[in-house]
Length: 227
Image (tube, rainbow, N blue to C red; front, side, top):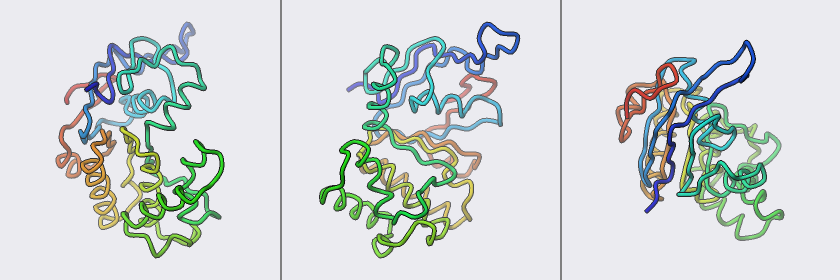
């Protein structure tokens, strides 16, 4: 079975060929297998966000190769990257990015609408199933802006799982939450990763949560020092 993610000699340079040229990542090699739950840690400016943007197909490497489920992504055009990202990668960010006027159910349906183009009962059933799984079945019809911060982030987790992606990228998903809500969101990500066999990259500054992951990938000065 191919790794979910493989980076081979990946570098990222911004403002190439100008006096402002800045190489943020240097020859990164990384393999992430199905079911792995990995913490990504490092100081601000170390390259964590750039690494996540590359793995999430939101940006392209300047050099090296990036594989998603064995597919080398370098030859894909923007439309191909968008399709691959939509079906293969779920995102949970520090801020939930829900649509305030939409219900919890409608927010969870959004990735499926992006693929299918129109709502149907199968989508609604999938969204309802996910909301129940994150403990929010009774809030399915409530607008997102009437949910607490912890509830909104749980909706965001459900939304990220809508397409059953093999890869989940979580960028400081507990950073804005109180301790109890942060623990609940981390437990959900851990559980869903194990149950679905998803690979998870969990960016965090919380060493206690990082120690509970399968391994820690430490990014320092644009290079991987651990993991």
